[in-house]
Each structure stands twice: as structure tokens, then as C-alpha cells.
Image: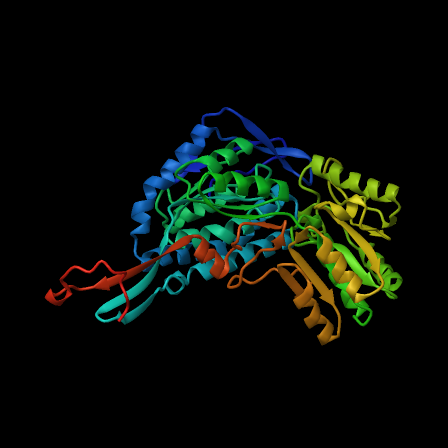
Length: 507
């Protein structure tokens, strides 16, 4: 593998594009810096695509589409299986690249790769997933069949927080269904995309079926408006998701745009508070809170809030923050600017009257002084008007809101503009069943704090957490990357002659 790496702290290397089965430097001359979040040092310079570079990538995908579409399902599936085997064998290598550029600890990076692998394995079953239907003699001598066919070149625009898993939510299904792909990864951690592109080539995927364009808004907007891009899959913040949806649909494209979140975890008084405290810490601080499914709002039904907050604080104090390659519990944030932004929310929450039970602003990390460090932070007595509650912080900040009843908890969640994920912790089956029915959220966990669906279901939220009607992967993913066609067949004989201008009827 020749993917972007550094061999010394002061050495940087380029992160290029990937077109026609090989690295491509691009034409813009613009680049951005890629950091190692645990040291604060520049690790690479990533190319920023021009509109011409995007056009070249789309042209590569368009040229490769007819042959790939016409490749038999067994041959396409064999390529998927080869990619799966290579990825599984080298998952440690990919996890190391993720940790070096995102900052999450190695164990978390390995978990990301494993969840992406689930979708690859799901896509290996594409022959069964694409199976159509057929009705013989739907009318006398007339047969009707249905098929699903690929769209053509599709674009995937993925976020920084899961540089391997989120692209794998989409491209295995798109490729297995016969489409060609242009991936635009985050410019903050671009190297995982190049590593996967090289792996596809090694697995035998024809040149042009999988392409990568690096860059910023120029690249995104060029993909959204290019006439040969048939569909766009996006994951990111809600304002950008709205822009992606509105721009791409205005240009006639099919769009699935997954936006931001403010995920709530409700704890009822009958819950096991030790298990609930463990879950809140795991879901609130894993990956430094940089997950769209992180629990950021803990809604506690009184009278157990004091006891639960004490248990969470006790556990939070045991966490080690540092370089993700050193066996720490939590790594740095992805950039210095993002770290400062999250710290600013803690300042605002304290000024607004929230109690800072655990303060991560002064953390002493197991890592370089220049790293983008912020420790786990626990805020109590947060109210719905505070910015730490209303805004998606995307950092290791857990806010505790106290309510008087189950009804108050559901009312709070349903009033929130986001509807991505939620959880309830209780030993009352009736309350859990009622919650799953009444809460206006797309993914619900019952005593499961991060209810990310397995690959054969589909991922996606409600309200301002989703733009478009289709969720990611699973059956909905297969339908998104294909379109249906119904074929009505009759083999003519002389008895079918004659003129009849009436509307055809089935007989």
C-alpha cells in the first residue's frame, strides 16, 4: 500500500485524488493541512479539487458505468467478497490511519471498521437483494415482471467523524448494485478513503468504478450540480445537509442527506442506576463525543438525578485522555478550532447557570502538549434554553436535564427539532414499549444507549436529522441505489390483431 503516511513527526506527504484506478494530483494547486490531533502537527497536505477535477472524476465514473452495469452479478459479488477479505485481514492498518488523522482511540477505530464491514457483507448478498418478481398470466397470455437497475455515477459526501464506516454505509451497496462511485471524504482525515481505493484496486474492481475527489465546498457543490451525477448520499451537520438536499434535488438528483442530532437518553426511576451510569459515560464520551449517535442530553426522571449524577461523575473521573495509540480511554478532538468551539460551549453553559460537575477544560493528557485536548465534561441542571442543549456540540459534553415525569421526558424529546437517536433505561416493559411508540425519533434503544441498526436494517432519523425519504444501507439503501422497472410481455399471434381504441383491460 502507498497511501498517505508520515514516518517522522516533521515529515508530511500529499493526499491526492484517485481517478481511473490511480492517484491523481489535480489541477487546482490548492491544498489543506491534515493534522495529527494527538500532537497538533501537520501530517499531510490534502489536494483540494477544482471543478475540472470533479468533472474528470465524474467522467471516469461515467465511462466505467456501462461495462460495470453489464458485469454479471456473480462477478460483481466476487469482487465484493475479495474486498471484504482484504479489509478484514488489514483492519488494523486502516484503524491506525483513522486514529492518526481523527484522533479516536485504536479500539474505537477498530469498531468503526467492523461496523463498516457489516455493510460490505450485506452487499455481498446483492444477487438476492436485487431479485425481482414475475407474474405469469397477469392477463390472458400476458406476463408481468419487475427488475431493479442501477442509476449510474453516484456521489458520496462523508464526514470527518467516521472516515471509513460512513463511506462504507453507501459504496458497497452502490457498487454491488452496478453503479459507479465518486467519494468526497472530509478534508480533515482524507487518507482512509485513499487506502480503501487502493484496496478496491487490489480486489479487482475495474478502474473508474470507485473514484475519490478531495477538497472543500468547491468539490461538494460541483458534485451536487454535475449533470451526470445521478444520486447523492451525504452525512454531516444539518445546515449542510439542508444545502445538499436543496441544491442536488434542484438539479434533478436523488438525495439521501443525513443531518445532525441531539440525542437524548431517558432514565426512569426504576432503572438500574449503575448500568445507566455506565451507558451514559460510554455513549457520551466515546470518540470524544464526535458521533452523530452520541448521547449528549441525559434526561433523568426524578427523584434519582442526584444519585445518577454522582455515579456518572465517579466513573468520568477514572477516564484517561491521551494519544489514541497509547491505550487511553478517550483521544483528542479532530482540530484545534473544533476543540476551542466545544470549550466555548462549556463556558456558555456555566455562564447560563449549569453546574459543572466534571470539568474537562483543564485536563492533563497522556500525550503531546500540542494535541487538541479536552476532557470529558459533565454539566448538571441544564435547561432547554441553554445553548449546550439547543446546539449540536459534537464533543465530550454530557448535559443532565431533570424532569418530573415520564411524560415530561417524552415531551422534551418530541419538542426538539432533531430526531436522530434516543434511548430509555428502565426495567418496566410497559414503559419501554410506550416510549418506543410515542417518541418522535428514527432510532430507539431500549437499555441500549447507541442504537445504530445492524446492516440489514437501515440507519436514519426523523425531523431535521434527515432530508429526503431514504435511510442509509439495508433494504432502503438497495432501493436508493437502484430504480424499479416493470416489464409487461405478450408474444403476439394473429388472434391479437384488430383496432380497439379503448383502454386496455386485464382479462
